Length: 165
Image (cartoon, rainbow, N blue to C red; front, side, top):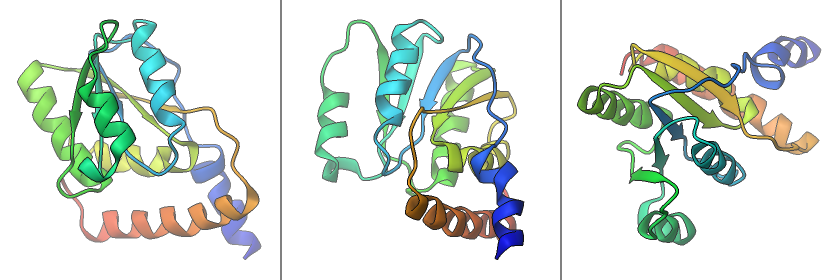
């Protein structure tokens, strides 16, 4: 158990988070932790990229995000999508499609800290450009960390067993 916790520190607790740099788009990955959305929107308002792309894996069942995406935001060029499948791999497939359509070479990816490494691993299989992985600022409780160790590890295993985009 101790080996698992220590082994997960560089992957989940202290993943490689990249310094912000200007990009072609900002992609906010979907998830239960809603703190990533305002953080990603603020990066767009600050001008880090001309387009903010939002994954809404719950579709119309997520009323807040659906309404936000339907509301005009003059300070943002906002594109929202429902990934199919509703997973990081589905988000990577949409990133690949949008990047090819718009000629994006650099994308800032916003997620939360325990997901950064796994998201990078999956998205690199879909997008050949530069990923700038950033974590939304958020405190995580000890029970949530325990859950994320298990959840992210299982997600990594699935990505290894079913590689590719």
